[in-house]
Image 1 (tube, rainbow, N blue to C red):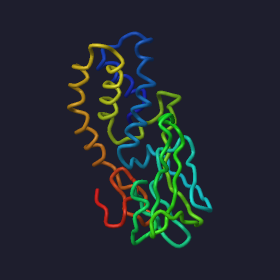
Image 2: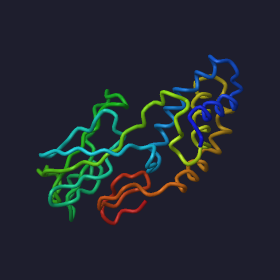
Image 3: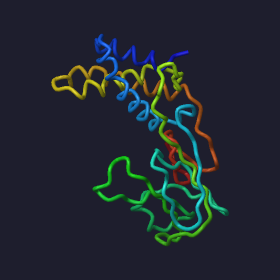
Image 4: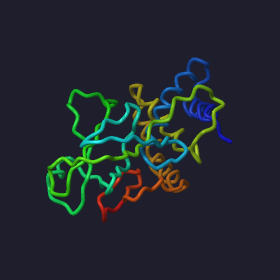
Length: 213
């Protein structure tokens, strides 16, 4: 069993960190990398799947939500579309993320809207929104790593830590070359996200009917 402490130790070793203070500096970047990987693929253990219900045309997701992956109404499934395409006619109802103001922070809450097949007209329905949330920041190093492999997490953390320092970009680039293949290998080792009827991309995002990864 690989623990969070094991990952911290591997990152510290890659960075040649030896003091306790230096080793403590890798913990927050490691958690942020954990969250970043949660966005890259349907990691069933790392992502925490939740659902909320609403009646009307829109709903606001909780602040810790990564994003919605399905919306199911009382009579239909709403497939994902970009907001710019919501005004176009389609053969089925759709949902989209409402645009946020430019001043909104990256962690601002996301809201979802549903529209009818006619395009542009807000749909009114009683729906269940299925979404996933970021993993909690590990409180103890003894916690089990909720990924089938640690390599991508170690590489991502090392890259992020090096990015905090000037004149380290060349060193970080060496790890970036390895990262994408490590992430692909990681995704290949995990099962598909829960399915409630809609097509989805590899990241778990709902796709329009007939959509492809």
